[in-house]
Image 1 (cartoon, chains in turn purple, cyan):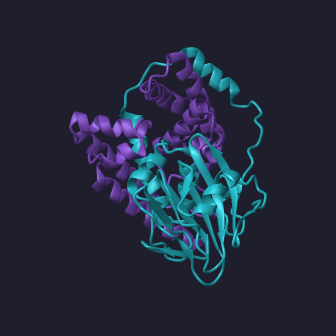
Image 2 (tube, chains in turn purple, blue):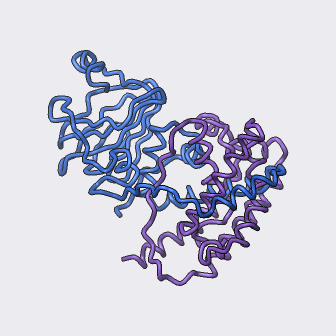
Image 3 (cartoon, helix red, strand yellow):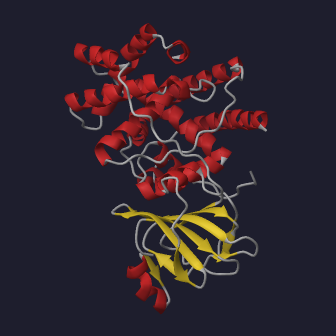
Length: 171
Length: 211
């Protein structure tokens, strides 16, 4: 992803496509979208990944998290004909050196999240999947207790530390 | 950034992060995240969880044509998107809803003003301007009401709400928010139902003003 962002590397983008396009298609079809329309959405998502690559920040998000958000935005755009209001971007110092330890920490947290999800009972797992596929309303989510709160909480702490650090640098 | 003490509850944040919150509420949550580091971190954590689901939910083979079509389109020109930044007390998502223009205030009487940002099937969202010491007309509501303070502060039966604080009220809460002394209170408020006012005059005005 960084080769795509920094060098506009097409071969690297093709690899990214090979990894994510089938997963995106599976993800989109899980909500009942047909194969043809799912591919149209995958196309738009992958083009957005290429066009907005400069917004990707490995200190803040894993590639999959960043692409997940793009995919949900595109689905909302397609099916609800509206665009999801998004938080304003934090203005970042473009010259700042990437923090390798933070990038690693983000990756490790994602690995732990993945393991936590894999350990869940199938019915709990299905609830989580439904929630992040965007199939549960706010009221339905509130009624659920199956979410892996502990793991999410530690990811929140990690993110908060990083954001505070970033803001300190900006002052 | 002053200390924010009233945050977006986790279920709302999860629904927002997974893209399943009606538009008026989503705007308020996006504005809150713009002001609140803690909720931004939580939002990013939910995205990470969404990313894991994307990675693990199961792949479907894509057609060869899709890949070549995407690769062919990489250089296609695209119209640049408008970027909205914070303007005064209004966070980016609110500036975007205002299309970069200042709010068009309409008087509700007693110095209270509102500017409707959107009103439709999924509910409504508006800006409210309340002079110090003035109450938002005594009201209850049918459904969920989210109120985010952008300037000044207000207090009601449940506590005090300053800049960046988000009040979540359901139909069981009958509350009377009163703007505190100091700067006029400006709030962003979303509801999924027309507000029901408890006093007579506002009830007559309700269809007129869409409040």
